[in-house]
Structures are given as structure tokens and as C-alpha cells.
Image (cartoon, rainbow, N blue to C red; front, top):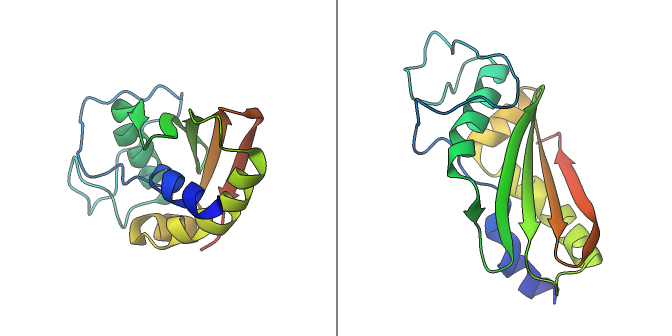
Length: 150
């Protein structure tokens, strides 16, 4: 079942929020808007700017795409900023996914999937973190894992 779970949930771990800029995206999480790095162009990911600007850009550009079906088991339905932490929330819609399976899968896959992406790995090395939280389905309590090191 672990192989099936991996294939089913793999797409739900990490999305590049910066592929389609949306200048009109709202900042609904109360975080202060930032001006961006001097080397970034409006509408582009501030790849070498302050990590706080990169976190804000990631959240602001992913939010308008939600809810986003990831696969037959998962829908990404939330993203928010908590300081330098990006909190990604997924709704598990497949009742056959168990807590133990999801915990094992997250432990095995969240760090490499986050750290294999150059953009997110650099954000983590610069002090940001990514928290993946899954709820719904057969889960009586959410399952959450934070990636704080790459």
C-alpha cells in the first residue's frame, strides 16, 4: 500500500507557486507586504532577495490557484504565511488513506521533495520552512510535518 500511497499523494507535496504571476493577488493572511529585492522585476520571483519577500511572493502567487485538485486523493485547499513558515494545507478525500500511511509517506518524501527543488531548498537554507498539513478522509486529527533544513 505504501507504493500506491506514494504514487497517489506525490503530486500533493510541493507546487511551484511562481510559474504564473498574478499582480492582483490579495494578501489575506495579515502579513506585511514587502517591496521585493532590488534585483527582482515586478511579477517575478525575487530569487536573491530577502527570504521574507520570497515567502510572501510564494504564498501570494499560490493562493489564487486554490482550491487545487492534486490527484484522486488530495486537494490543496490552503496556504498561508506564519512568519518565515509557509503552511500548505491539503484535504485528503480518499478515506482509504490511513494516518500511519500518511505519516510514513510524509517522513520519507517531504524533505527530499522540498529540498530537490532549487527555489524552495534555497528558501529553507535562508531560514524559511515549509509545513505540510493533511486532514480529512479517515484522519481524525491532522497530520503535519515541517521541513526546516535542506
